[in-house]
Length: 166
Image (cartoon, rainbow, N blue to C red; front, side, top):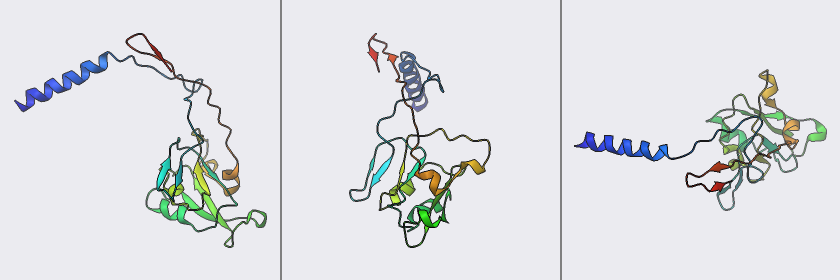
């Protein structure tokens, strides 16, 4: 009796999905429209602020060189290394700031969660392809540059009942 019930449940689930109209996004000509500037974390309330997890943005003047972002990344991807910065970039006593290797990064957001000074947050820039591994390593100077993200395509799909959604 258990096998027959399982088969009926599986068939019922499959039949429900037959009525749903599928859509395909024509990437790279069309891109999703994201809400917000990117994933952020508020340590005072312990709540993550919704946003897409893409390339990191570093605010040099907020970074104290505490290495909490690097420690948070250690057990997951080991993508963040603390590097010495030039004297004109030095905004903390230690003179070190995070450097991120996007060849190793899994975009989990733990580094953003761990930063109590709001020095790191994740932008909506998810197109990080490169022809070499060295180009995927972003220095503190590269992380400071705000990415130019154009999100102008909006998804519009037809409801089986005939109503348009978007």
